[in-house]
Length: 413
Ligand code: MLT
Image 1 (cartoon, rainbow, N blue to C red):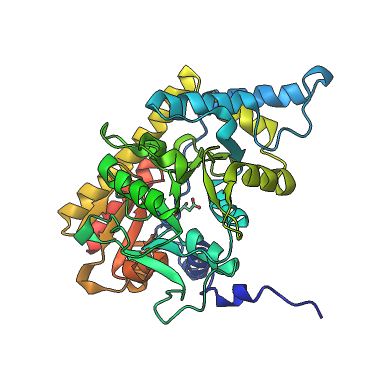
Image 2: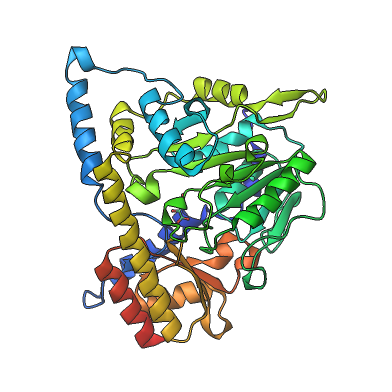
């Protein structure tokens, strides 16, 4: 009989967001029996609600027309992504900020979530892996699936991972480990806490990685939400990062591509890690080989849509979207702070991280919010043991829903 990857049996419950959806669906089914109840407002998963920018839609419509004519038809594209998109990304997202990143170092993909899991394909099984706690669960679960951990304890912490606690005490910036780790996941602006890292803080991480031959996986999916001009948007704004960091970016949260799917990963050609025999090996050719073997690229239509993000109209429309969600976050912060809750994030990020009232557990607050206010959020404990007693609200929703959700919460708190 065939056997399975037993590592999957180590995973705790379902992946966080499907698990929340499952619980909400059970509630919604009962709730439908009482039509006088107000509709459920979902501030759980960070999924966008506003229409795609007009510039992107126009570019995608034109791309569909291209596919309807022999002379402009496109079949398989380059696995790494079309050069015309990678050139624009390199110029606007990196070179314009002083980052020494070339278009050839950019790999267009269908998602940062996918890439942050897939990247493990090119790394060995003996790396010591550090994650913050709380953390975006994909970093942990993909390492579990790949067999990089032991079993989880009662708190859901996996044997073999190095957890770096983040809390209000350290401004949600993990302390540099006092031991050697090989792979480090950093996410700024942070999911779930909404915290940001300064240049100095990132420099400390880069210095650590360089001196320990570690690689930083830098998830910058939310960089578009940074409003403070002093904050770095990319790890490559930091000296030395070309030699120790891989960066993940996405069109999901800035341009609303969660359903359309387009993202990118940067693997600098100067980046190296060691083979078993101790020799230094460049990572770019390995990732290129991995993508060419397992991935056929993002559709021509979607890449044309992503390219339009960099047109003057696209830039303006994306700014409008980000400003809109950031204002939502500010409404959440203001209303809940006024209601007496302790609230973090929501300034340079679309997530608001709050301390649950009356010391409720994260899941108890989830249930209270759902039952009493018909509002869905994300329990902090779903992001790790140190997230217990916290709760995340997403600013990705319509203004009407955010205001309505706040009214309901403030009335019941
Ligand atoms: C989240 O809510 O944390 C994100 O939407 C998840 C994701 O982007 O995959």
